[in-house]
Length: 183
Image (cartoon, rainbow, N blue to C red; front, side):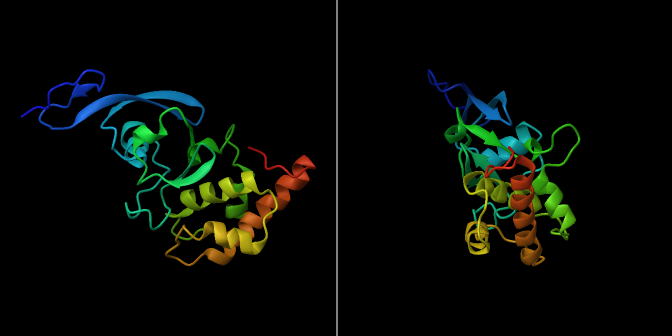
């Protein structure tokens, strides 16, 4: 039986008891309208509705960090964030970092340090690191490790990733001559 359409909630999804609603998301600086159940994960909306497949599905339980994006400046595991909670907040995905066919300095540092083996965790790692560097442009090794603790790498590339984050922080400081990470 179809769900009755309730005023203000959107429209009924055929053959479902779920009501979809129009959700406006600010993804990588672009306002995007999607029709989704408000409890659909942000990860599903990013990948399935918006075609932004750089953000990976790992565990679906906020245990691995493969799905990390920045939501309103904070690193979040998008697999457990309802899309409706992201409405009106800026969302940055891995796709936002490259500009004019040039890698972001953090992406370049991961490449230069060989900080990826299978590569599956890398988008989430880079977004978590990007969030850290926005808040703390010159983190200590202990701060890097502490911040990245929620992101897992099955290949064990952690030492190279820490070096890459340090390299990016150093490069950003030299490039700008200041303490701020280039966004």
